[in-house]
Amino acid sequence: MSRVAIVIPMFNESRHIGRTLRAVHEAARRAEAMCRVIVVDNGSSDDSPQIARALGAEVLSLPGLSIGALRNRGAAACDSEWLAFLDADIEVPDTWLERLFALSDEDRGDVFALDCDTPRQAPWFAIAWQRRTVRSSELLQPRQWLPSPNLLMPRHWFAKVGGFNEGLRSGEDKDFTLRLHQAGARLVALRDPVVLHWGYEASWKEWLGKEMWRQGSHLQLLRSHGASLRLLRFPALSLGAWALDAMALSALLDGFPHLGLLLVLLASLPALALSLRQSLRQRDPRLMAQLWGLHFIRLHLAGMAFVLSLFNLTARRPARG
Image (cartoon, rainbow, N blue to C red; front, top):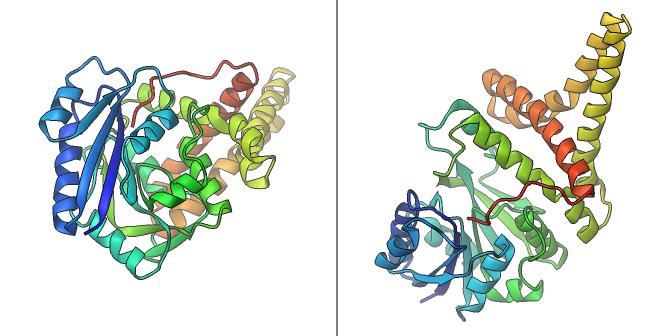
């Protein structure tokens, strides 16, 4: 029987933690796994710690830490052969552990994750933004990095790379799994079944705030991993979009409206390219149009966040899963 510890960082997740834990217990029962659930609370002011305890989780209260530190403390509190990291607003399918353990038994990979989707009652922008990550080709796909709404791995891989970077405010999942890949771990994502993200952005304000926070990690990732094309690409595109916007505004003010419109169009082309790459696989023109607008906004947020990070002024929020 496999022994797995499931580490869940949490901050004020009373709306979701009950659903998350009930799904985890069902997945462990179906996989016949010895499961230890460790919720690492970052100083919640609601009743989410009490809900977690009532549903059989161990709760560690560690306010004020980064999300990487929360995950590391949870992993250090147990000695299981397997480690899983799960966000507090994620609902796993009942076959979550069963499917991923089977892939390990078949030697199909070392670090595993399921794709993530959004419940249909979410607003269109939250659904479209999540759909951009849902893969529509091979069922099992090798990856260079994986996001951490759900991760499963043997403990020795976690130990080999020293766990999560505790100095990162965001992007710690990308940093961690990039280091796993560089250490030789085979990272794979399973397209079906999916986990559901119930902590979707319910308003434009929330979406903008989360994206601004997420984009604040680019400079730290560059410092940690060096100036690779993969890490430089998006900050460069975002700064280029801002430069073209400035040139367009200057042209309009100087009485050259056609040149200004041409520059605005050029500034939107990177967003169009990103949306096409992510929507063509799903053959959905409406999704392409939605992602075009969302990527255009995100590119500008990323440029702002990158410049602010140069002066250590990036957006801050409590670490949460």
